[in-house]
Image (cartoon, rainbow, N blue to C red):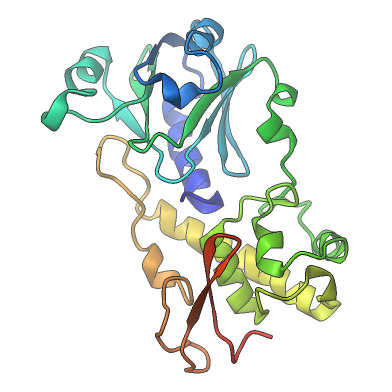
Length: 279
């Protein structure tokens, strides 16, 4: 699932392509991608609007229009594709074995942006303002923002009785972290994912803050080198596996102490950790 680094890399790659462009037409090929909004809403509110800014909030891509906003959320497998023009879009989109799957397309004066999710978990929505989007309005502090300080992290931890892993995944507290980078951050901070958040002491909070920031920064670097290639229907982020120290390494030796990495289910998701290192 794309987390903060992947989404930030998408935004930085998309910005020079889409920012300043006018949306000439909107094509909703699969209405499930815009649910629960009606399929007529996206074309009605977005057609004719200009994209003033392309930005990220948590795991959302936000297109700030001259009136209203458009949000894209990739969920598990969503991604973006870029077509040279409408002719290429209609020649390739949803054309059987030789085509590419496209759920929603935004046609610009120069190029077409396609939103793709074969599993149909991702969503494209339009709103009259940021406040109208419950998803955006509920987001907590962004994990790469200047406001995400050690003091703020300590305050949030002290107010929570949830296990650390669940705390980090709560987008209403810290926006952007997902399963992979939560595991990685806790491993780097030497903290047990099962520990109650409010038991974390100040020196441990400092370690966790440093771990979160460094893990996300390193992941973003990997996601940008190479940058996403929206022209390639099979593009995906490369090189991330090399930076992972604990996630997906069940049974393999811990890169710090050599003990076997363990995996267990935590709130319906796989958690990876070192029982010897993380306390």
